Image (cartoon, rainbow, N blue to C red; front, top):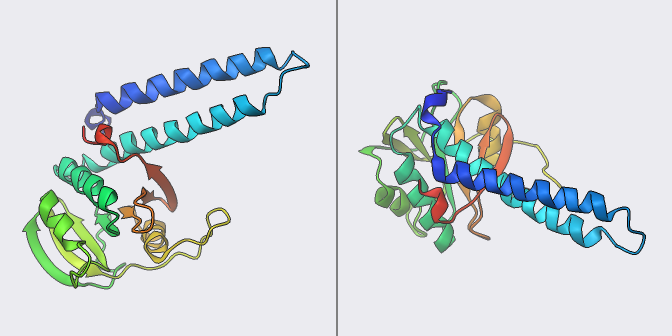
Length: 208
């Protein structure tokens, strides 16, 4: 990854402030631990919540870092993900990186159009015949839609993963692709890379 493409200052500043806040809370917790009449459970709950927020901010920051060397359309991708999340329209977006992905996926419908956020959102609109599969982004273009990805057997936590999340992980286990997932049940957004799934934020701060 080209580090020079990683200057997304608003997210970076948010992450810095989040980590500083966690550090302050941890130090307060260490001091109050010496007090016999103070229960630390409430403080730990606050720290846990702050860690989860920091993880989502960090994932959003690195998502853009990982995208920028391979496509100039990361702003359009971020915008469409924001809108899809708000409307709870499920989506599966594959960004091809170094590995050529044709041998890892079952091809769907060729598109061959310049990527725009409106086109990407329209593909995943409920009722569109292409919305159930994955969109393949190659450089600045939507290469194809309704692609079928290999499914992972990995289990994350106690909750069983849905098909979109298993597909995202499955492709990321076999290639260096970055795969973005929008859950239609919750609207939550994650990205899979190197066989791991990371939640990302879907507020305006994502749109750097």
